[in-house]
Image 1 (tube, rainbow, N blue to C red):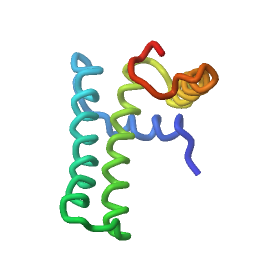
Image 2: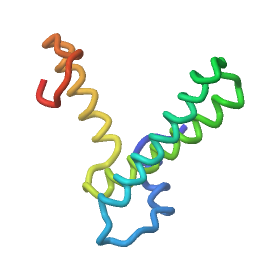
Image 3: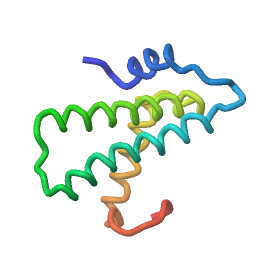
Image 4: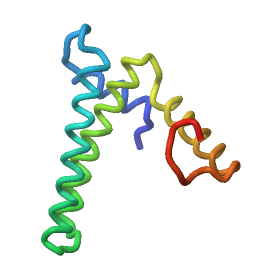
Length: 108
């Protein structure tokens, strides 16, 4: 089993983009790949189909591409993915304790 930091280290081996494009390149890639995930699910809804085993795999591959860009962005921010994941869980737990998980805005 791989952990987030190991994944981030291994993903870094395939991160080929110019230093001057740090943050920008993974941000653009992240939006594109997340769009591909949404598009696959949108087509399931449009065609009124249920998710079969092959479609699960194809969507999982696209989510994996999202993960790659998250790893690249975390690296460019100088934060390891284990830390980023922990920060996110702490933020969500804090919101849950304060009863503000629902709603909108970052400063809930």
